[in-house]
Amino acid sequence: MSKRVKFLLIAAIALMLIAAIGFGWSWHRERKESSFSQNTINCIGADSASFNCWEARYGQMVADDSPKVAFADMKSKYETDDFMRTNCHQLSHVIGRAAGAKYQDVGEAYTQGDNFCWSGYYHGVIEEISEKLGDGLIPQLNSICDGPKKENQYSFFHYNCVHGLGHGLMVIEGAELFVALKGCDHLVDQWERTSCHGGVFMENIMNSQNPDHHTEYIKQDDPMYPCTAVDEVYKEQCYLMQTSHALTVVGRDFSKVFQLCATSAGGHEATCYQSVGRDASGSTASDQVKTRELCMLGHSVDARRNCVIGAVKDFISYHHSDIQAQKFCESLDIAYKQTCSQTAHEYYQTF
Image 1 (cartoon, rainbow, N blue to C red):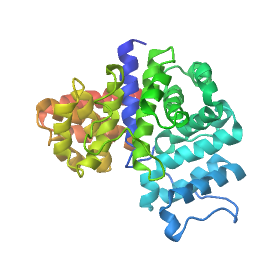
Image 2: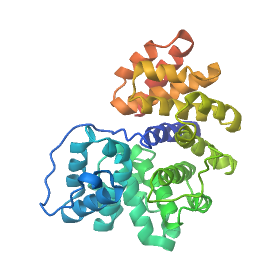
Image 3: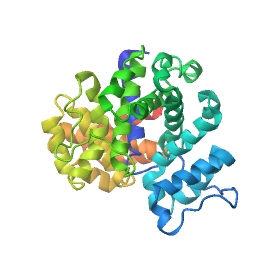
Image 4: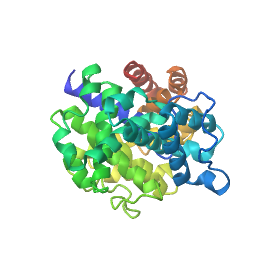
């Protein structure tokens, strides 16, 4: 696999996963009935919007039964519960961490997993295993994902493991982003290093949106920080994430975020615009008309074209199909239609 293809795969998967931040779109949207003990913690009334309560509930379900029971409960609430939709990726992390604590083995925990809500479960497993290893993580960094790597190198399964290492490094390093990035650099394989960097930046954004966590590496007066401060090797993965935070700073004004990409991305404008496209699709639940309107707020043809690229990838991720994506492409002006259709075709093959 060439370096270019490997990088495009990282970027594509990262765009899928990042859509989970703030919007909570799920990989699977089926409903299933939960089965669990009558003694299970109930998050009702004021606790229905308490992350701590749901964290305790799903941790108990995994410990007493299995991750599948916890996911069944989450899925049964996803369609009708705004809190669950918004926090499903983070709560999938919770289930994964509980599974990591229960099984104490990446391979065994992964066999109990679920891709629901952008594979947060697998990231949580690695977080838990990483925290247990503590200072012993770095010496094992290049072997901890051997199972997924041997099964299908550079696959989505492999990606989730090494991306999860970035989350795990943030946990054991006390959310010190720059230290965690250097931890990723111990990975020998460049693809794995880049995937790990993405996990670090994703954890940083998650911490900024969770009132029970804290990060010093998000600034209200500098929406593109830390992308503006990290070394060049880290910037691409940072800008794939950062617009989700920037939009919260500017009151969801997409035009302003396009401008931030144009003035602050320092050579990574295309990546930044694609990140805006992902957010455009994510914030509208992949509505063709609304997504197109948001992308057309871009201040240049390049901005609008890259927004379309990010958006059509998210359409495919959200619907788990290319049908709606192709309809989105057909709705565009001729200047963007071909780029959109080609991206949809190539991305759906990867997906």
